[in-house]
Amino acid sequence: MLEVANLVRRFGEQVAVDDVSFEVPGGALTGFVGGNGAGKTTTMRMIMGVLATHGGEVRWQGRPVTVDDRRSFGYMPEERGLYPKQPVRDQLVYLARLRGVRADDAGRRADELLRRFDLGDRGGDKLESLSLGNQQRVQIAAAVMAEPSLLILDEPFSGLDPGAVDAMAELLRDYARQGVPVLFSSHQLDLVERLCDQLVILASGRVVGRGSVADLRARGTTRYRLALGGDAGWLADFAGVRALEVDGATALLELTGASTDDLLTAALARGSVRELAEVRQSVSDIYREVTA
Ligand SMILES: Nc1ncnc2c1ncn2[C@@H]1O[C@H](COP(=O)(O)OP(=O)(O)OP(=O)(O)O)[C@@H](O)[C@H]1O
Image (cartoon, rainbow, N blue to C red):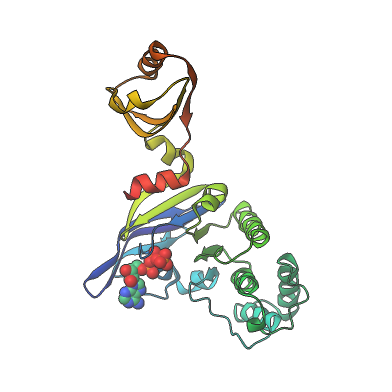
């Protein structure tokens, strides 16, 4: 397990990461979300040791992380970092060799990963001759070439087409299933919802939410959709209810004092009720609520 404990990073006067703590357990996919400038990349760089910390600690398997530990981590940095003019397969093999993988194993592994990402016939091509999405696939292959003990991926899904998103998602799930802790940042909240076992939500350098999607949902405000036979406009002034949206005969509501029975009784006294249903919060709803 990776633990980030009270991490702090300043740039001049600005506190970019402000007392950030969370855990990335093995066997689960952890999504790292937050708006532009929230501090995700800075946190990941501190985890990887490419940026110094100004406070706090990164811990791996219960003790402060070492240079050797970090050598076993797979990292896909925001700035990517492969050579545009070098052939794809050579770079993958070279990177694995740097991490101590034997030449024949490295070759086999590069071929396997390239096949997995439908790039089996592009190994001899220069990286720059590939489309951006395909370059992205090679970057992820580079991060996992040396059988990493931990995966830290900065926006691994950006720029990928739906097929590549699925291949990437399956790859990350495979690692998580093998017990590798996986932390990835993303702005695609629908994807995060589909993929993640747990979430860390950052806003202005601080953790504003963390836990499983179900836990975060349970902590949020429950919303109801009420569909009536007639106009739902009266709900805007109904005591104990906050109408978030009224559209003809349908309303989206939060209960601020009234119970669902109160609501149904009042609605039935005015006409028929077609539906009263709890609305499941999406990750986008949770995100909006905790970062508001
Ligand atoms: N090298 C740097 N020098 C000065 N300020 C920096 C530096 N790196 C990051 N920052 C600032 O720190 C804050 C956090 O940036 P960071 O890149 O970590 O955010 P992020 O959550 O990854 O954003 P995005 O989703 O846009 O990539 C921002 O205000 C950014 O401008």
